[in-house]
Length: 174
Image (cartoon, rainbow, N blue to C red; front, side, top):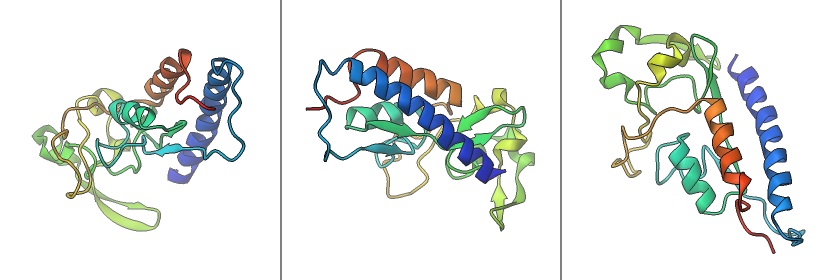
């Protein structure tokens, strides 16, 4: 299931990227993108060393830092909503482990052939996911933003990218 959702995410990213690119090129005032200019794709949002992965705030900073596109990874909730998370186990990227109301949801699941202990998106409804907050998964990253940002849905990410691309292009091209 994880690989299927990633494929769906890639397809949706391509669709959003195409729409973003078409909108952005309409605002380039005739300036063409240099053929050898690098294309910058914001992995996990684009600013993961600065802000928790897969948050709208991370996507915004990634775009501000020069990402042409943002790349959301997707997992499904219990009620079938796609949310922006890199992996289905929420233990390292959200505050779920610190919330006593969800303690009974801790379990072992096999992900890509490997047993993992944690809290899995497929065991939570979207309403429950919206009570969680994103955290930095690595200790050497800035932890000061932990717990401040929501977990966005795919629809929220798409709406955000559309808003960002409706005016000026994400990055001016010469």
